[in-house]
Length: 131
Image (cartoon, rainbow, N blue to C red):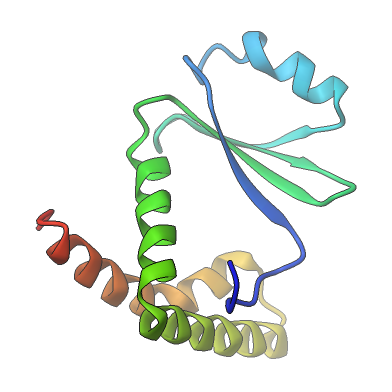
């Protein structure tokens, strides 16, 4: 997204008819060089695969995934609300610097951004009439 710093990894969502039916979609993705690294059936039936060249985190969800819809709402919100895009960008920079200095992993980086994310989502959901 223009104006928003990001890690050098593409995060992409792939919606499949049944994420639990891994035999239907994993073999072609694996033959294309993706590797399954996360399986979270309790969280929107989520799977994540990693790919290289370019670096990709491929998130697999079902067609009715609330998480994928939430991500699109967030993207659209940031595109239309530069003040929140800037707030989020600052939170990302701070979280990245603090996490790197502490030798932390992505989970801690994400936790450091959580308060700002919740603040932005509260505004987004309120304006959309979802709260």
